[in-house]
Image (cartoon, rainbow over all chains, first blue to last red; front, side, top):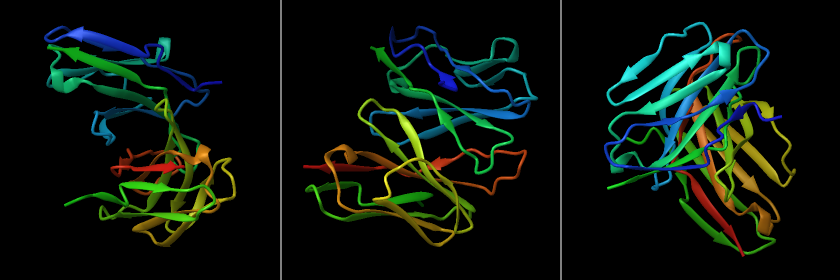
Length: 116
Length: 116
């Protein structure tokens, strides 16, 4: 079974629109970590955020914000006032606390295109 | 200064050949990883080393062999290359993992392997 589900395969928005990328995870652990990564067209993977399971506070960083809800096992990512430079594939990932080796389970990614 | 570097960036080779991809990190991290990203962008872990010791060895053909001469380097050697090995291979590193704390992983730029 997929531990991380990103149901949105592709999203297109017009510049300056807000967009939310969904991430739903599955784990039986009480301690776990969630991550978001960005992969722009150039191909590198850029770390965006880490959140542990005991911290449900939402986080905002500039135009980026993350909403973590344990009740729905979701860790959604919102980009406000999107820009063309936000066009990329975004990955959500899970690491389970009991797991040795820091193994990440990545979702299948959401490809975001911001149209100028 | 590049944090996680990989060489080569592109690798084109014929079926049956043996090739190596090198990875180096200058972050002082203790754990390094190899991932494979297929044509659909799906990221899957292959191996993980902690202080030169293999700690994750996912189900990959034994034609793939990682080698860690020291904790700053993790190389990937592939024997008898097959068409299906064509993919982008990413190296990553993270701080040492404890049983209850997981650090983010920092990725190299990737190596695009094409087997003809």
